[in-house]
Structure formats: C-alpha cells, structure tokens
Image 1: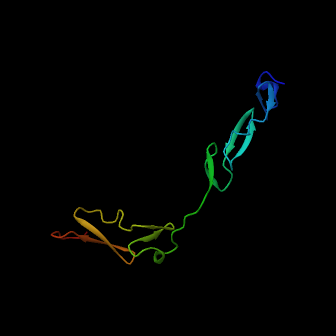
Image 2: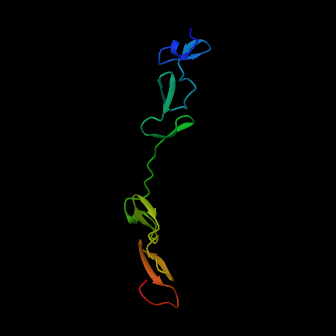
Length: 116
C-alpha cells in the first residue's frame, strides 16, 4: 500500500495505491529498463541503436567495399563505402571531373585553358 512514491522502495513506484514495477510497458521491445528513484530509465542494449521508448534496432555495419575494385569504376572505396572521387577535387571555375578506373581527372571545360 502507498500514498506517495516515498512509501515504496526506490525500485518501485506508487500506482493505484500499490507499489509496482514501473518498467512493464515503459520501454520498447529489445530495450532494457532500470529504475532509479521510482523512475524507469530505458536504454538500447549494446549492439543496438534507436529510441529505447519506440524501438531499438540491431546495428548493422554496411561495408560496401574494402578496395577500389569492389566499387564501380567511377567510384572509389573510402572508409568502406563507394563514393564519388570527384567530390571536392576540381574546385576551379570552368573545370569538370571525369573518373577513369577509380581515379578522378580534372579537365578544363571546352573553350578554357590552364591548370584545372
């Protein structure tokens, strides 16, 4: 029997004049619940991510590549992802970038000359 939270141990809460575990229904599936001073705290377990109140999902590593040859010839393997190697390479005005065999090449656009 309880009237306030203080009538219950810190691991329980006062619900309908009874000391009860506040965890059931407080957290989403796959999340863990711990009670501190009558309040439930939800957390995603190791290897999971997301909102522990709405849902935790298994963390999956998305490895696209280990080397350039794992990517299409117009992409380069960067941090295990196939990315456009032209991004932020040819910064000059009137330049273009073409990728051949995973390598970016800067060129002057037609009608322009110089070092791209």
